[in-house]
Image (tube, rainbow, N blue to C red; front, side, top):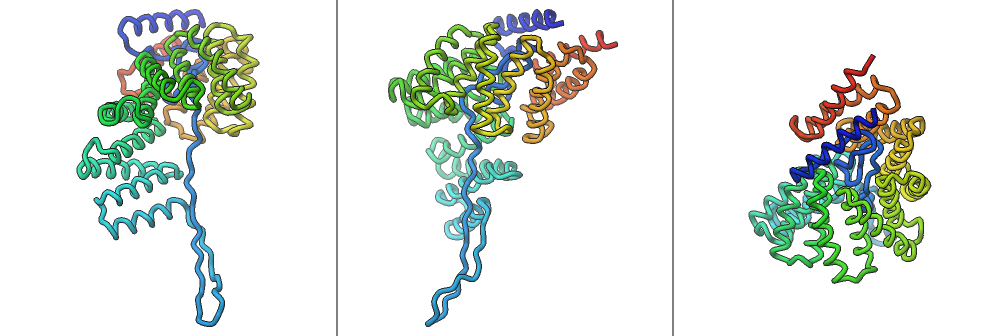
Length: 416
């Protein structure tokens, strides 16, 4: 069974090389990532495009009500705690009343409100609507290449990516990157950040062959401008190494990471999140090189570090555990890999919902390992859901839909 899947994966990779298009995910042991940068399928360890920064949570405020009476000391009557979105809404209302809804200063305040909503549970739909209003109005009032317009577009693109709307994110990042490069220059920090956002979207869309030269260029520019040991340069090295992994250039990636990890350990310490992110990629590339025995202790240490740093439900932790499951699968230790992947799927379902792209990808991961574990009926049920969800996310003709349907056809022939 595993051999058949590996042959199919090799054929798909060869087709992708000939056509220049993305190679769809394969069965356990062969696939690469999809929606969140670095997430892989089954036994193929994901390459984390870089550190997943924790979602920012804005501060709230406290309103104190006091009584002032002549001849009597001021006395506090009440103290009311306001949530961040309430504070941002008040500021937005005040700006609209004072300046009007289309005034440039008001639009900046509204963008700040959208930023708060984007990090508020249940607020992302309102955030998208507000960002679109702000960016559209700034485009009309200030121009499409004004600094404020481009800032709003960039934040909206980032939110689209976070929500799994990666094709929209990629389109917006493309335009944003071109505009910033032409108006600010290729070396400007904002242009480099737009390049990073575009590369991350391309990686999520499995277009690593396009992302890698872009990341190489930003790495070279940052190295020249900031020096080889600057924190932004070290992070850029890790992102580029991840792209090399996803392009199948594993030896190059290993050399880069072997050099990077000691530099990060010296600068930050062994358990710093930047060091751990690079060690995670090193473990991933070791598995791609079929050096599972070397990879397993590396990845177990990475899981332990992320759990201590960020907790069991953080995306960095879940990606690290997915990597470990990939190693266990590659070593045919299915009894250990399957429960680990079940737990990852349960946590992502709770965090993102049943239909979020990263949840769907985790469901496919579990199904792929269940195939090799001999639990074909359960795998078929999971893959049926994946086929429907991938059709909704990517469209019915997308290669991922085709791959899952091929798996289902094979399973139907072999189910008792």
